[in-house]
Image 1 (cartoon, helix red, strand yellow):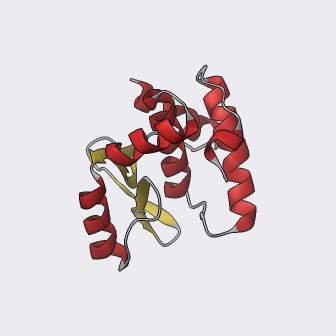
Image 2 (image 1 turned 180 degrees about the horizontal axis):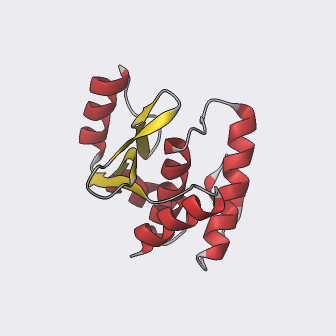
Image 3 (image 1 turned 90 degrees about the vertical axis):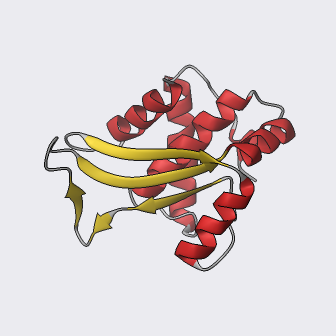
Length: 142
């Protein structure tokens, strides 16, 4: 339920119109690396990877539901647990943070763009606050 609430909060805060489909898959470090190598030609650099389904200026649409298909977020549960231990946070807090970060990436925010990094940091903090799990950016962002 936390993941669903997190996805909804991101979409609502970003004023995403209509309904959306987002795939969230939990995996381990090895499978995440294999996926990244297969799809992006490199190993994973974070605990998650977002693979947007965007087509040019629009999104694929599920004809049966009318929902826009945003894409998939793969999360290494193994890495999330490691990161939770490092930041001294509960795992559910780390998973919520990672999910919000991944959904923002599906919406087009790049972790390689300095302006996007600042925006994502601020948005994730707001979303976590709205979900009742406030964070300090120092816990997650370095």
